Length: 445
Image 1 (spheres, helix red, strand yellow):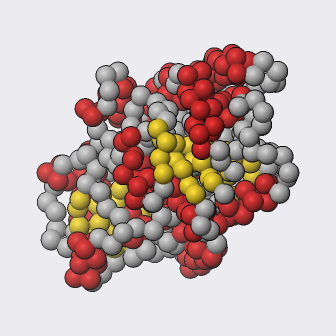
Image 2: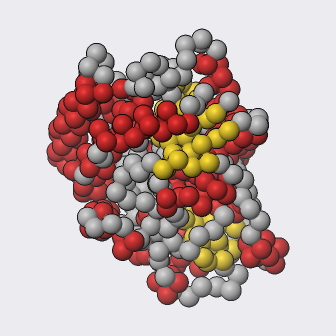
């Protein structure tokens, strides 16, 4: 059997998708990844084949820098970073305005290239990143059965009366004004309508008989795979989902890192892991305040600085480990607290390790994700633009002294997530669907 994985050329997307694909590789099956060249090393590290498929202008093999992006994408990235400094609603408004170019990039050309990839690979199973809309159009328009993988918080797929880009929930300490939210929702509704019109136009060109979508952001594949613990998802929202499976998490196995192993063995004391992800590590002001807060605590710190220089962090204690990139799952296994922007990879990997989270959400689904974890008592969220070092330290100290009942719940969740991996759950769900005798590839390819 052959599994085809379709991923944008970003490490933060490919790593969980490739991890899901390991269940097929472990079963002795062929795995082919269709993605761009920037993440070729990741594909090869997993031992998979790669088919060339460019799904957007930008790319990111690990740490993203605006100066490394093609013309136009560099300015867009700088604009996004600037928006995060203005606050949650300006950031979401900026992202809404850029949504068409970001998520539905050259849709007809990409869709037809997806057809060619499918013809070459002849897959038995196909999984595709939910945000790869142009690729999903190609699969849908050609009648290729596939699983649609939501790598972010489940709110990244709208249900009911939700509007894509408009958070259905907010953390307690990030409460925008009613007026700003009314304006944001109106903008997101307008973007949804334009986006859906373009989706339907391309779909009609690919398959004139295909039914038009009412909301392209709510479209899913034949099977929906959510990289999130079902235990934390509201039952009333789960009831609105199309056929689906919750994967829990997609925690990758990492290669040994001699420097990290030596650091873990050399020092004693509780470990706090800090990362703002491959994009938002550019916020050196936020990382600097986090570092200042943690310097006042009796903890060791492993800090993934990304594109932030060491100088911007202030004095670095000798017991700390600071590098541009760090093996996140490895360090989370030993950590007692994680400080994060609330990206879904960081969140699900921390939960799998049984680690509470101090969250500083800045964009997209991070606000709703932080609100969900706060409701569950597993995290505390602060405003990244206004939280002082003293407030950050106080929140960290509270999370290091969790109520025993919350600690027990976190431990139970960690046990559930480690008992059956996300990759195993994904393959089981796909095999159950493939018991249907209908072929993966219909005659329209």
